[in-house]
Image (tube, rainbow, N blue to C red; front, side):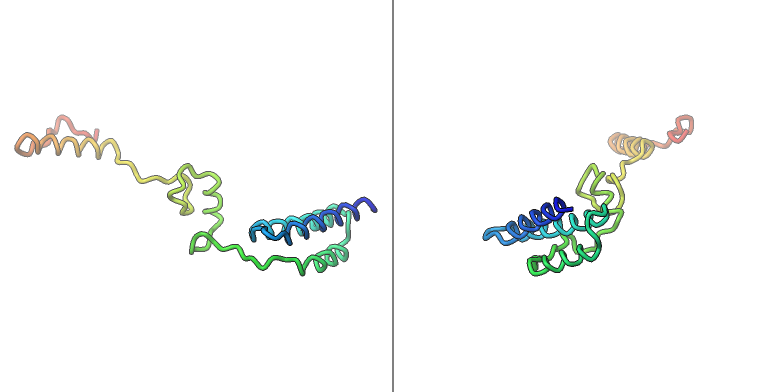
Length: 137
């Protein structure tokens, strides 16, 4: 049990040192703080420390907790779908909760009709549709 105490004390000192560095970025300070807190949670879950000790270590570190708050990049509240999409999205220009959505492509039938209409107009007049060559069949 003494080794666990040494390890936790070492993590605590390193965390305090990194949080109180003169030029430490606020994001880094926050990351160090929460990494330490997470380590305490893990130690308690593994049975290396009890909950009372974990709470005591929390309180000891409380005065070093950074005041920095993480701001959301988007104005809207992210959803679980958007989070899943960020991990799998092929194009980041549409983070909207739908994975790999792109602008709809025209169907072949629509493209064929458009080409037929353009071809008919370019021949100085509309070409009546030929019933024997129905593109929908």
